[in-house]
Image (cartoon, rainbow, N blue to C red; front, side):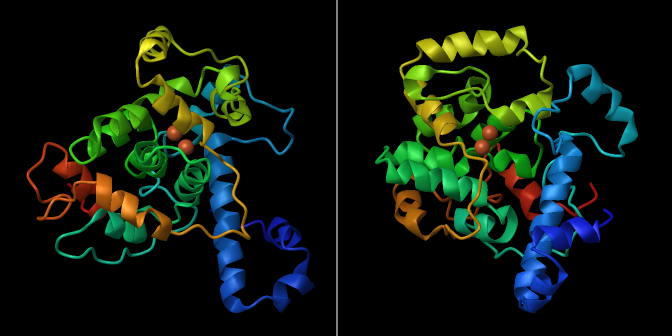
Length: 271
Ligand SMILES: [Fe+2]
Ligand SMILES: [Fe+2]
């Protein structure tokens, strides 16, 4: 991806201010800038919030790219991908977070919010894991993530992860949840969810665990405060209590989803 130097330096408050930063801080800023540029390129996010695309406009852009919008985050990045650090022989969830899901600000921030609100540990865990499927593929990410976690987490946590995806299209004023502005940009301003999503919504709305899935959408924040660093540390005990870490390591326990973990561990494997 080509770097727009002017917009990069402008974002840092000018060239002089940028040069006063440490090399490390400047490298971090560049990485963040490129990430935002990629998100904008993939989502076609307009700078002007009023300039939402229509569905037809989004469709007309499909053949202008050499990737599809559903590509997983591990497989398409803003600049040439880096060699990944090797995984330990029996990788844990923490290893995946630290070596493959980083940066995971969105997940950590969502879980931190649920923790601050005093939500149940099952919900906090769901918030922490809810978008991990996007490492493999963005399309249907709730289902992908729920499937990869299902053998290891409480059933209601997997339920919340799977169905947050559909619930995100449906406001619930009682839960203080409004239709996300970013969806106008991602799906088009004239988008309405297709019938099968509507059907899923009706099913989840009546389900006894509706509140769990809804809680994930309520804590699903896209904003990130660069001055606040949320680490995995506050969640280690919750993971320990609710995540059934296989002793052979994720990817090597013979579970029906082990291949998904191996895919994330080794995304450079050609076949
Ligand atoms: Fe999501
Ligand atoms: Fe999310």
